[in-house]
Image (cartoon, rainbow, N blue to C red; front, top):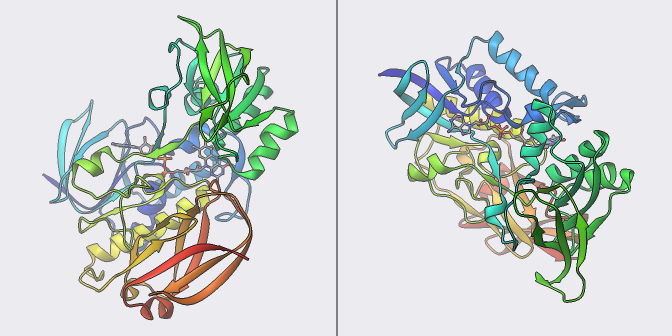
Length: 417
Ligand SMILES: Cc1cc2nc3c(=O)[nH]c(=O)nc-3n(C[C@H](O)[C@H](O)[C@H](O)COP(=O)(O)OP(=O)(O)OC[C@H]3O[C@@H](n4cnc5c(N)ncnc54)[C@H](O)[C@@H]3O)c2cc1C
């Protein structure tokens, strides 16, 4: 069996950044395994710009951002395998993968980094009455058809869900000559970034129907139309139906971290993020197995994925070199009122150099509020926030001494000003 110091599962932006950081920290025996025919992950189909503002101080397209990392990986001579699907990881850190050249292979790793990204919720995951004719597909699939394969999936399109992929596809389909009739969002607020609402809908006069959903799909073999209805607390309001003739319905109803192999290996997942529960070093409950990027929690900005994955890579390298302290006291990072989750979920000050960045999402839209951070129930600090929305990931930085000051937990909550 072949041995590697670090095996990285997934060659998207998280996997590439993690691999480069492992290498930079002096651990050279690395393998990146990617199931697709190219490295780069989801970025390859995101041909719009808006990537890299923080990491490169430049506005790049997704493929340009990915290319920079792929080139660095090649320059450093880091080994990678394409068209190779990881089917299993085991607690002893053996990894099983398959491809058409080598067949079924088992390798031994000292450390593993899981960077498998996320998948889109599909029609089967949401309950819309009616048939499932052709023309109903996820926004990401439509994006891949259009941007990579060159197919326009419809000429009269409606989008269900206002997640970022749906908003970006509303603009993209319009620019390619399709008529985007509208976007319906079941919640009273959008699931996408504010900048995408403005740049992808408002700039093209595409209506956004908040507190609305699709209640019927019309058509047997091919979609012919949809019924859209207002909702009150998720329940359709009678006599509010609108009927639209469409030839495509795109679903942008959420992304879920891809963790089938993690779960099968016994990695504990968080009920909210659906990604692994990790400590300050992005290590899961299995020693030497780390996770980052969209497999850990869904990110809206690739720059955050890169920063997080560099940290996971650095810690995995430390683990291999025997410099990582696992047998240490940890405190919990607990999401309270108004906070949906915090990543990481626990922290040891011993593995924090000077500061640690905590990522979180809020549960609702808030205006003029404060984040209240408490150490074991005692107030530590307050941070004023003018506007918070679940679609936008928030960041709070704690210092090493602030963590050292807590015995059991640090909590974060939202409080009105
Ligand atoms: C449509 C869309 C638009 C976006 N727009 C922006 C934007 O404008 N600006 C911005 O900054 N960010 C944007 N983002 C966010 C950002 O691009 C992503 O969060 C980031 O690229 C995710 O990187 P990742 O490596 O975690 O996941 P991915 O890029 O999804 O990579 C995961 C990789 O793992 C591979 N994989 C999965 N399972 C296995 C397995 N079992 N074996 C082998 N390989 C496997 C997959 O094939 C994939 O290549 C956007 C995201 C999306 C989806």
